Length: 290
Image 1: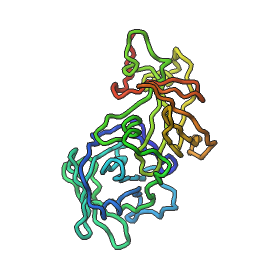
Image 2 (image 1 turned 135 degrees about the horizontal axis):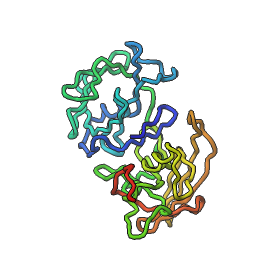
Image 3 (image 1 turned 30 degrees about the vertical axis):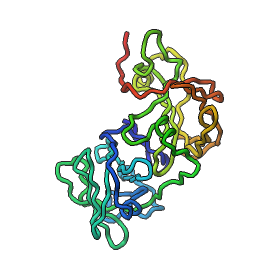
Image 4 (image 1 turned 60 degrees about the vertical axis):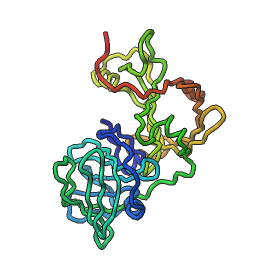
């Protein structure tokens, strides 16, 4: 599972460890309070100031309601990404997040505006004893097409499967490209809440080959993380403004505009001279058919 480091890579893009189904309407006051990102540091009882650099073991938990209806996303102490559909409610200083996917979460609101995690029985991501400070407000969605059409096509709509756009150069005659283990692909994060992103990745099978200096049959494009500054529908599909995030610390590079020209489930990006197939099936594997 790919984990992105916050706050430099603000567009989280976890494959769902827990199915993120739509949980229904949440309490609006609880939504307003929670929406955004909350930080926790394990090396002290009090949460850090927002301008303090996060430690390697620090955690960020984010809450999003505008698109999904309710989603909590964070990294558990064992390093696994967690993605939980939630319905938020507030009773006094107690904030409860019910979930159809698990036992849910409970927090106590402190006088200084921080949150203290309460005990969660039978749940691996127990937040009891952790204090969180809100450090990140939700990103502005004004320039991001949040229509049902865009969310369904690029991924992010409630109850919709994750979407990948697989480079058609890796297609094999008589084979389903969406099930091809050795490929490169694009993913867009349309949900946020801290930012929106496009990533170009190697599949797990290619990553494993590269790790042992094994040859890959096709020339690979450079991997890349981009902040999605805008996404606007056009007559042929969408136009996107992308800012490159430069490794290793994700500093901002150049901003460019690309066109995503759509025909059925195929997407052409003329600026990159690449064609992609929209895929909602298939899971990454390192097993390559001989």
